[in-house]
Length: 259
Image 1 (spheres, one colour):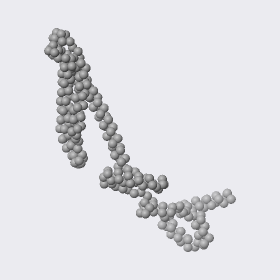
Image 2 (image 1 turned 90 degrees about the horizontal axis):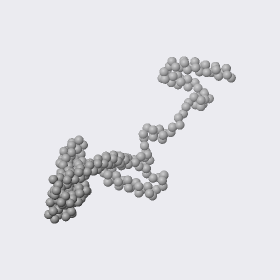
Image 3 (image 1 turned 90 degrees about the vertical axis):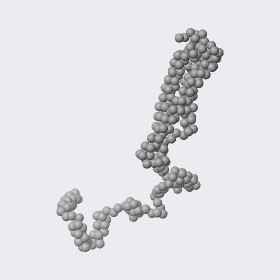
Image 4 (image 1 turned 135 degrees about the vertical axis):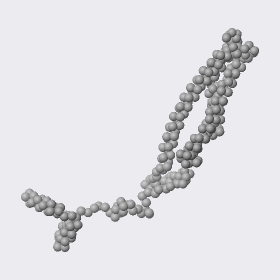
């Protein structure tokens, strides 16, 4: 048996080397010619031992080629014309999924929502960074205003003594410096808002030029501008509380003797 198997392998190797000299067309013609002499038993043996059959079906082949059945779609792409229509479609799908079993529910992916969520996350991160920078600058500005007000109190000590000698109370002296800080904060806020409105003009022109989107514009709403001015005034008042109290505590006689 071992010798017979070796002989078969040697003969098969020799036949393979001999057939390798022909191309596929010649081999097909030789096979077609030899099959005309096959008996029924030889055809059965050729079918069972030689031929290899694929497990693919007609439906799987059509699916692999990209052919789909409209009555049984694998997926549907829905393109909404606006964000409002997208929300309506999403609500309709959610209402449908409430009344059907889990296996019959529609699974959907809101690509626009995913992109907008990512963009919103990035914008929020940038906003928080800018807010932190603004907060630091406001703190530094408040400290500087307090220092400037304190220097002003020291330089105007004699003036404070005159006011106290003329009958001004501690509250009146403190109110003078508080009024000054409020004016400083109001003017500073108004100047900042005015510069912002002026900067919006070239910024909007640049945005329209780069994006070709006429509706994309940077603007500062009036209520927000008024709120910023009020915040500026409050910060200056808070920064001037300590210097104004320091001015109010000065005794008239001591203040008048100061040169």
